[in-house]
Length: 79
Image (cartoon, rainbow, N blue to C red):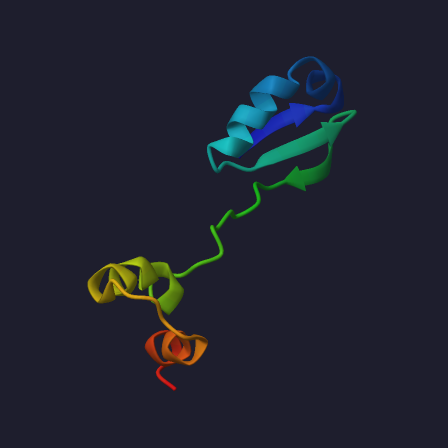
């Protein structure tokens, strides 16, 4: 884990952002003592690979017709 002091934080913010964007955590110190741990946020697009809506465009292309709401629900949710 990279360590950075509060004074370095002010002058090296861009470097800190690159470190976090790379998925690495940073330890922040103040007067030689650890003050905080800064961790990157785990980003997701909100859809898992098994989400039916993630692959819905394939089903829509195969059917090539206008669907009712009920038909869409049946295809997506199996109801």
